[in-house]
Image 1: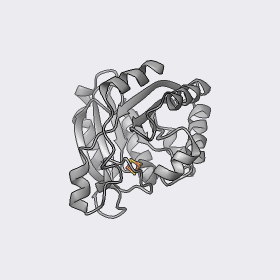
Image 2: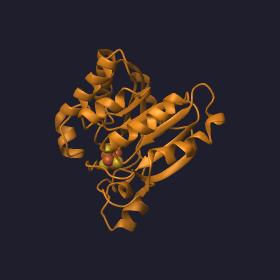
Image 3: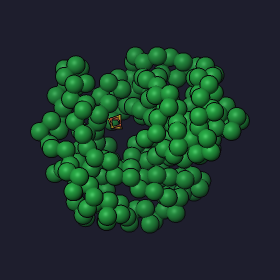
Amino acid sequence: MIKVHSIQSLGTLDGPGVRFVAFLQGCPLRCKCCHNPDTWAMTGGREVSSQDLFKQVLRYKEYFGSDGGITVSGGEPLLQAKDLRELFLLCKEHGINTCLDTSGCILNDDVLSLLEVTDRVLLDIKYTNEDDYLANVGCSMTPVIKFLEKLQERGITTTLRQVIIPTLNDTEDNVLKLNTIRDSYSVVDKVELLAFHKMCQTKYDTLGIEFPLKDVPEPTGEIMSKLKGIL
Ligand code: SF4
């Protein structure tokens, strides 16, 4: 059974074209910038079989066109790699493009099997150095780079995504390092910089958790344009 937090039937922000986006429940990380703290808990969510979730996806197939398909996001979808493989396999058998939005922090046999039926990965590379990972994500950067190496070995088209956060990673140096990572892995065809936002504050308030970045400003359009220009 797949633990689903929520569904966006027709999304356009998480992968190419129009996509059915399933946000899954559960995440082992605690990114300071997380805008989905309501997905952290390993318990909760709605349990759905891969077959039933696939039936929901199939209803929207006509909207996907040539680029769209399904994206599974989180939380951290790699926690549920085994069941996701079944879902993606069904999608592939029906000509539906499969996309995985992940932090890339977990690598095991189930994850490797899931990659066999994954068309694209959106790899949320949160920072470009170990210290920032340890301080602001709560894990090492090493497994993320190992995950990217597996994507390269398997030839899985990859989009690198990073949330730009003033005072943490809104520097030219950081984007130059992203460029270096992109240029080192030929499977990476795109890098997306996303502006940090604080719309999640109400979720933290509801959960009674302090939002660690509540005093950090959102990046200006000018900074975002400048950094995107360096890509
Ligand atoms: S990996 Fe995603 S869901 Fe998990 S804490 Fe980080 S931003 Fe939040």
